Length: 351
Ligand SMILES: Nc1nc2c(ncn2[C@@H]2O[C@H](COP(=O)(O)OP(=O)(O)OP(=O)(O)O)[C@@H](O)[C@H]2O)c(=O)[nH]1
Ligand SMILES: [Zn+2]
Image 1 (cartoon, rainbow, N blue to C red):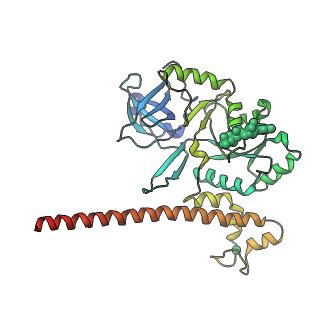
Image 2: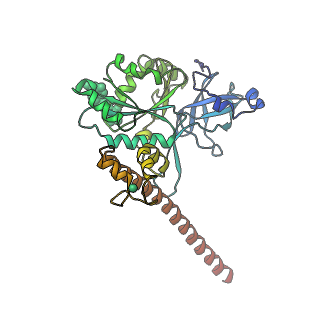
Image 3: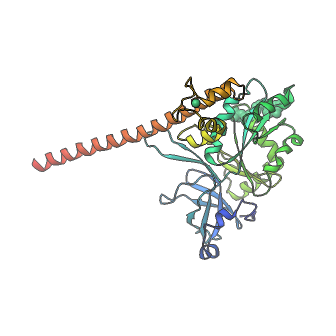
């Protein structure tokens, strides 16, 4: 097992402690999922890193999840139960069965990465904010490639206008001194993850945040994993200043689906105005007494923001509905098969 961790290093919080009774606290070991593979999880606990084989009767877990182990210090370590996650990124699987795919659990902060070049896009940032809000994870907008931009403050201001409480930082991801601006969210026991479109500099940022630690954790895992490959697609890493960095490709492909709450939270300026509209079902188009339109005409609200609010709302509804439809059509197909089987049976019985 080699390396060992303290519970606080691993991100243990009162929220998890409260889920356990005294008996469980004394008999079992709490462990956190660091890597997810097809047939096993790599988990970390006070006893170190170890592999847990996935059994069909185990609940589905994601990187970042907490679980309890029995006899954790033996090769027979047994999964006892999964703890309820404090936050969760999930998505509806595309396919015949409408399954919920768990992407990342117990993330404290998500860095919404956007570069300061022609890729800069406020509506895209709002989309990521909706996902973060739905997952109940605190967002921080990280504007990368600040070194290539000659008017950084104006971009920061534009993002800040989306929400005066929003955290925004501009960095050159290649410069560790600048990336240190993110340290307040990367302290011991804090878990961070990343969202952002391709090429904005997520990998660069991640490498800078991991610093020297990349190779160190790599070596530890190599020694531990009996020669298996050290890097993995879905994994957590320790950062130089003690935080945990969660990097999984699923985060990069997250879609808006069934996240009305997250969208509304992102646009709470609009939803608050909407409460004052004359008509309860106001669509904020050209209805009389529309407070949203009034705010736009007074220059208090960006029309782009209203357009994007409608767009994201429709998108999440559409994705959620198509999942429900898939589920319904699956059921119909199931019924059809059963009908056919029954009539075959009846025919056989008669024959
Ligand atoms: N000048 C400058 N270049 C950067 C910065 N961040 C990233 N880059 C460069 O931008 C390019 C893309 O960065 P990546 O880190 O690969 O981007 P990514 O978001 O991980 O992209 P995917 O792997 O496609 O998801 C690379 O050539 C980086 O060196 C920055 O802050 N300043
Ligand atoms: Zn209205």
